[in-house]
Image 1 (cartoon, rainbow, N blue to C red):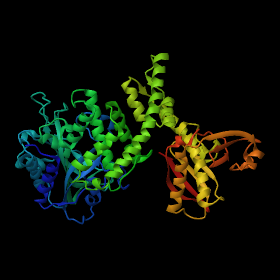
Image 2: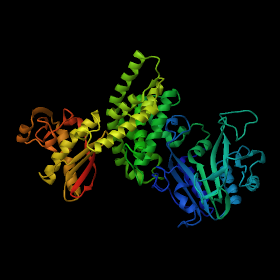
Image 3: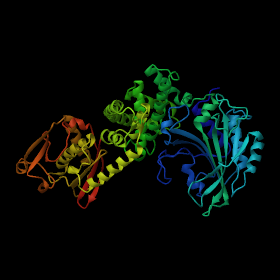
Image 4: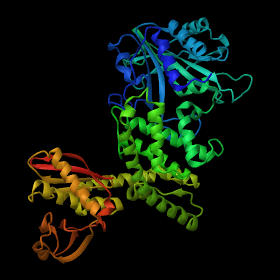
Length: 597
């Protein structure tokens, strides 16, 4: 009988509720800053305070299904088993029951509820070290529960602790393994074999010791249990599948991709890989944008990871001939059909999620077109003039990143497809030099506040002129530029103002700039004597610093400024302007940070 993802979630929660546990629900996927990670990567992570001794308001027996995001192996996504978003089936004992009950319950859930063959189910246990003897106690409980003695293996690796910490819980763990029927090995193959046949489906951690400062351990008064079972893996196994993308979690999306592309999943390795990447990355993007603490694509931190996922999905969508609108249809399948019950916030945020996906797709269309063209030119020149060179320099890779917004990971991936590698150290060095220049900009060491003359910074520079003009209309003619800092990621603009700008003032300013962008105003440059420039009303910051002959940039009938450039030719090139933040810079001076979409 086929078991759906919704049924499996219910089976897990009902099983432990019947045994006195309370469903505590899932928490945000986004790290809150207390654990040192961007995303929650394990079901136990949000419960760490309670595992360390705090009293949980819902008692000592807990369970849930927790969404997690793990992005350290993004490049591996595309095979049959890697996912960036996944769920963990969890249950916990906080100083309540311990090994005897837990081994029995894990065994019963796997064999009686899910139908695993008890004769094939294997377990690995702690083999002991200089501090703690091997865990013979749990071996006895496993045998009593029904695990065959010959299917239990001692390993030193079966020990859990928080790396680099002291005075924190630690202890042995018990991992559950089951064989893949499609990967036969030798007659002597067991759960310790690295052939890939044996897959871990769950783990019970017994926190019964405390790590002391000298590295030794002492018994804990209150012993805890932390259980984590892989939801996607279990769903695959109980349905007799070996491909995680054939479960009902992805079934609707894969069918949709087949219908829209005319391709058949599983026929072509490259097309199948593309479908998996799209299915996985859009799912994760939906979860991160639609989360209670949802994030948006950006160039830093968690937002950068989200941007990378969306853009990787978009690249493979183009490979299959899909439009960005069709990717929002993929998002809607997850929102309305797959996760509508377990993540009810997603349907409420559907319009917002799809809008943000489309915004990022539109940005990436421009980036991909320009960057791909430059990348192709780079590869063509290497093949023509230096065919023996199979390595792209860090400087060239950084130029793609800095000037065209092309992520290093994308350059690296495309290069690998052509048989090239990237000089990552060279890229790192170029990036550090770039950062040094940015610091120089902050000190006024670069003309017009620009970090460089790249395509993106040129657009931002023009945008500062429009922002300056808009602020004059909203706040009054006394408003003027007092400083600017422009990078390829954003603009920063300082101006005199005696109050925090209201939401209405910010909205008016943003609307004015976008109206001028939409009008497609021509940007012209004229050389003239500084005296004449002042007479015709051209504005300038620190007029005394300019030479006798200056350049005056005029934007329609909106702006006229003395400036050293460079600028775009038409405001349409700026696409869309958004004020990201307004804050105090110093007494009587406010600062706006803005981005171009």
